[in-house]
Amino acid sequence: MPKYNLFFHSNQLPETFEEGEKEIAALKAWRESFEESVVNPGSILKQSLIVTSETVETVTPGETLSAYAEIEARNKNDAVEIAKSWPILDSGFVVISEIVDIELD
Image (cartoon, rainbow, N blue to C red):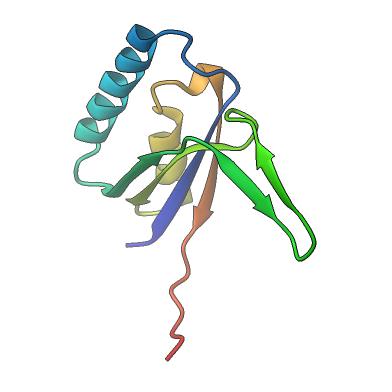
């Protein structure tokens, strides 16, 4: 079955500890509801650095990836349906990328 990375972008961060806890609980429930499809539940990402050959730039949380997960789905349409169920989708969007395994040996 094909694997997909789901890259979550959120335009707003939780303003309070309680809001953050609610989001984490919603993410746990999402993972449990797709237990058979979630290969790697990923992580929430705190801060990013953009690195080029000449510069390193700190990116404010919310301006780049917020979280990621790896799923298995029969096809791209099924991956889209799983992504649409992301619990905090109303504050951002999801980028779906099919994973292509390569041998580097």
